[in-house]
View 1: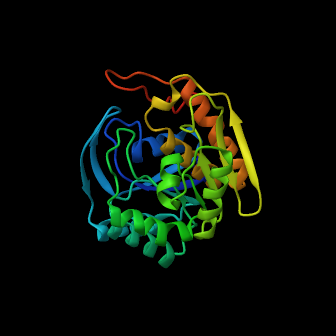
View 2 (view 1 turned 135 degrees about the vertical axis):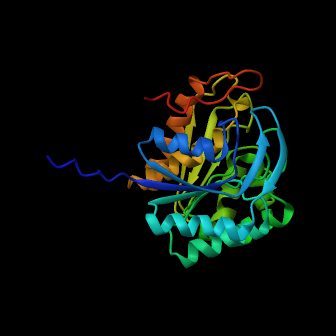
Length: 270
């Protein structure tokens, strides 16, 4: 009797730093992919000593090795979607952009990680400028939080109107679509995320979850969920809506692992 043929499965690639706690970074991205029944590839950009409460040392990987990781895994299978996270420095940003262009890979979901939740810088100033000038112009969608959108655009954001102005600026930089996460917009306001595809704005409003702003790794899970949905062939707006629902459920079922802030339950919907 012949053994069953292996079945095909969607594949997504994360290009990001590590998180030994598993709450953010590559480890969280891979869990998010798995929760969406998507096979996860990964390329490590930095080894980061961190837990859910703090970040210690950030050790960037050599930029050429980051590029080689991507090229090697792509020889096995071209991913249906890509997401980027913490990229550490300008050399790594440039290497990632060159590799995506050279191999004609899918336009990435760009999570422009600048600071950790504990305010530790995860990309240097030159790297931040490279994200703005090199990575955003090739993005399928950019997923900044309020602070990241302000840093990238120079626009102070305190309401839906200023969120729209920042989204327009990111589209003008070259991104095909933007979703600005409004979880930190204000404790007394609804959880508003603003999606823009270059033609129209869509306000995605949800109930604010008490304590949710302090949970580790929400941004990573959100962008990885978008990438997973794109790998499965969903439209960008459907992917964003699904990612918001995924993170909301994971927040509601958040878990405490020892000391420190809570972390998402990435498999809450299963």
